[in-house]
Length: 312
Image (cartoon, rainbow, N blue to C red; front, top):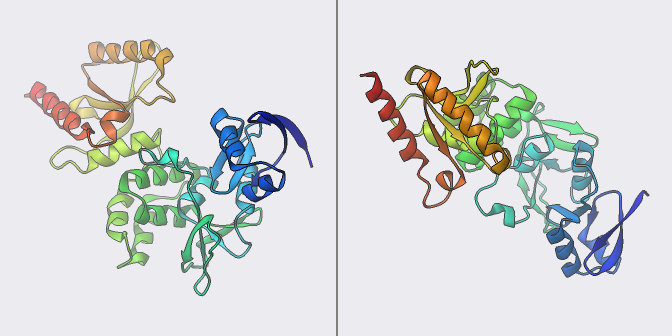
């Protein structure tokens, strides 16, 4: 076993070069407080309940599979949010969910059910084309995963996962629409049917998808296009969401890609597009999108009204 030295809490701990379970860690003499301290310090990653790995390990498909093999029985199928994570989509979280380590979503075929405390489980039926194997892990296919999250997650999160899965794996909106028919009368099928035509792999982030999800539910406004190209002497600029014939756009500035060091460039780019091309560009952030004070719908309505007035 490849062993790498690092620190957890006040004492030195030699971590294996693989994921490990809480039970293993307790067997090495660690306490839950040591594991919590390692996660808080960034020494340890805690991707799912009961599983840890050293932060020195590169997060790739092999590592994700290794995490799942710690808690998933051989005859179970990884589903829903966990399947999307394994298939390369980011885990889309509601505000505050980052503080809670999620259970793994695992289901067995009818007649079986897991009860290990680490998984969110139950019984579910799968067709012959619904399940694939990735290095020994049984997981729902990208299309089946998209159909499941489209029914079962909050719609803003669901659209983000479905967008990411389409970007990664290339299934079509027609396949989603046709696939939704098999879930007639199932929980969440109305939401799935509503989302399926609007899934778009061009979405740049889960938050952009959530912004678009809220936009799509506003009555009497045009549907947005994505990644709108604007030519400039400096190369092409792209606006996250917008209505080209109204020259109105919304951009989401998240902390990951729009930090303080990016603000001057973002301001200059948007100022140039406004000045030279006449666009109205509204910028929204996390506080506009999430929580009881979210006002992104009002921002979009006001912006489109201003764009329409300008054309009268």
